[in-house]
Amino acid sequence: MLNLLCSLLFPVLESVSHRGAAVVALRGREGVGLVRMVQLTDDKCLIEATIDRLPATQHEVKVHEYGDLSGGGGISCGGVLVGGVLGVMTPDQSGRGTLHTTSQQLKVCDLIGRSVVVHHGNER
Image 1 (cartoon, helix red, strand yellow):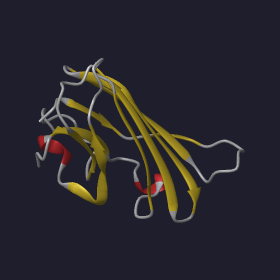
Image 2 (cartoon, rainbow, N blue to C red):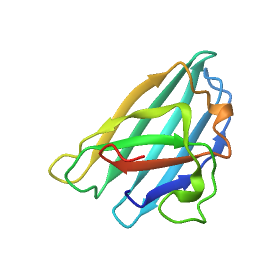
Image 3 (tube, rainbow, N blue to C red):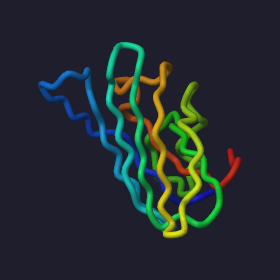
């Protein structure tokens, strides 16, 4: 498993035309980056991720049940949240991976206390 995970979230609520937003800062031995989430409507969450210094292979970005990072390697993060597979990214030649997607299952307000984990290939 890629050692790149971060406990969620720092909600950012502003008087803009969305229903909540959050930013997750990811930092690990093999990569650094941001995951941004914006609740556009009651049933649509925009998710964008940019992660640098990734090894040249596919990576799955997933939301896990717990924000507990004490176990190392994602062990203490629990299983993947229902609807928590955000997508797959393949880094470019510079090692930058990007992901742009929407979810009808995830809501920003439900993500507080969770973690985002970047997995090599089809791990866990």
